[in-house]
Image 1 (cartoon, rainbow, N blue to C red):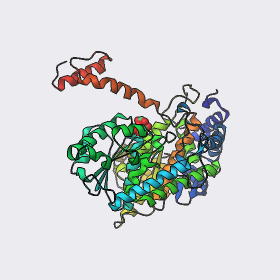
Image 2: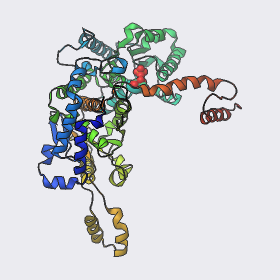
Image 3: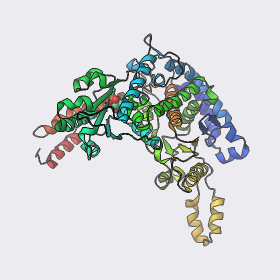
Image 4: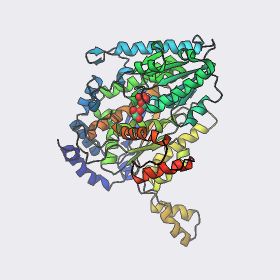
Length: 549
Ligand code: F6P
């Protein structure tokens, strides 16, 4: 099969990129006062301004050709209709079914899965109601005061990020804690101060085979049973899994097990019962508003023409920035304290989905795929790594994300936050020319020799691409829209790069090697079966532990 970069649409973009290379966004804005209107998309609840990208109308038209050539519309249809778009695992990727509020059936293998999805949502409603009302009691008859969610990756990052993001919508009810790391410090910290008689554990693991999660669950179980005996497990443990047999083997009853399915990818699963901590934190009504928001974005993604399709446009800009402008990274910058977990969440969503170098057909790609995603909330990021965004040698495209309304109005804080939000994208776009820098230094009264030496440092090239995403407020609905926006962006990029966004074989090798090394750490004597660096490190560790190799 022809490589992406040998296709007509890619070649046309390559030729076009030469003409755009010399353009500065300052000039594009100066030439077209309507640029904001032309390069923005407004949906009820969420707004995207992408005018501050190094694109012209021709660039966008050529990118749309690329999307059509790659079959984005056909792939979109395949995903929504439950075809096995996760080709290496032979499965659909139907996170859209989890928030399908349309009443339309979603078929998997000839069966409508919507009754299953709705059934689990109903069970979640009963469970969250029972827990918050105190009707669910622990083994000693006390109500639950704290819930500890144990899971890792997709079974952790989404729930924790959304719980944090929706802090202003927090209902009174049990405290919610998260444990992901196999480092014992994580669970030790979570359990410190908790009372086994009033603590409930949610073990979230799609596979129920993930070693970190099983180790933490076993430690939690021991902590509980040491205090309350084996019989307490039934009242203090629930599971969320697609492997109920393994949960039963751990001692969690079927009645306390919430089902998820193999057609839901881990990093796309917060909409399922994996989102139980979210439902506990904000209530089931708000959880369903989150689903409504995601569904609204799904409908937009399904129906809007590519040119006016927010996830498609964001995906194409990402392809443009990496494929034609050489960007190797992408920053996500939420100007909202409660969204501080968004970059970490998107790191898994994006990098586990797009960190691939093999095409669907099994060929090594000869172009760049997913960028390194990173980020931090504004304004702390501005006082940290933004220097590189403004004046570094690398091009780092960035998404700036903010809400018009603050969830915590405190004097003029929100205006100040937003002033920074608007100023940063303006600065990254405009930069500061030598003339402007000179005028500034002259106005400051700098002596000529100091002025000349300082001048080069005061110049900003600008021309750095950014997207601005603005919502009214970060409520459950807009959070649903925002997350679904990124999910579909990732999917579209995967289609264009001809990679499977829904597998993650790259995480396996390290897991296998860790399993082999674990017994070696316990064994006597030096190890010799690895490369000399790994042998040396393990043997030095043994020395440090007081065991001579
Ligand atoms: O690290 C790989 C991974 O499989 C992720 O994709 C997944 O989200 C995570 O592990 C946790 O998996 P599970 O939910 O099966 O415990």
